[in-house]
Image 1 (cartoon, rainbow, N blue to C red):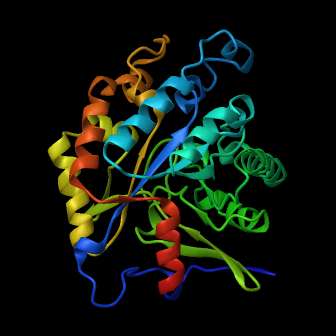
Image 2 (image 1 turned 90 degrees about the vertical axis):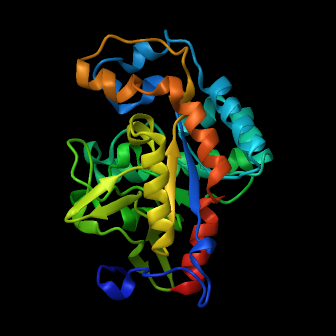
Length: 304
């Protein structure tokens, strides 16, 4: 029988081993593998049928990211859409061959807030099967499209656990017009238990300043914030003895992907800062410690 865990006793207050200092903490390097037209900003603007008319870019941009990571000798976790893995199994194998963890981003990049529990189960089951068939390994991790595990979709954790996932990184503890669960807290938590099995939720990185959670470390926040501010926020988190998460999409380093006519706010969210993203990533990778998400998971399990 499933039971939710939400009290402070089930919150991971410190995943470091006793006696280890802040230098032992790290940042989880994560990539959400999707085509540029899969981004939520284009939902309702580019139809599924129209997407077939747009040139694919995910192969080249993902390989560019692999090269960037190899240059800094870092490994990360790639949350891969089932639609991408189905069409491009060789890309999944290239990611795995470079030493990165394979995880699920769902099948078709639908926000959970737009799915029923039955539809969600079918979506994650299909994506997990495809990824495991292609990679030949166990897929432990999941990230919801557009961070769409929010308070009203927290039922998703029970389904993820039932489908064999061991951790999720799908909650952004902020207020936002499309996503966010500010009451979740800033620390990892076990969200459901079934017998001797459970699932962790590792929330996306924020730094609490006063009464406000400041999001940073990926997507538009990483593209738009000055680099010194991003490094400062990461350093604050590490000095506090916590771990952090950075996330990037392949299209965010792609200066060549088609410009689609969309409203101003959406245009800023999607396109602003792309020209400088590769440089920011390279500098972060040179100056901060990075690990795969499954390393974070193992530390959580060891210290829970």
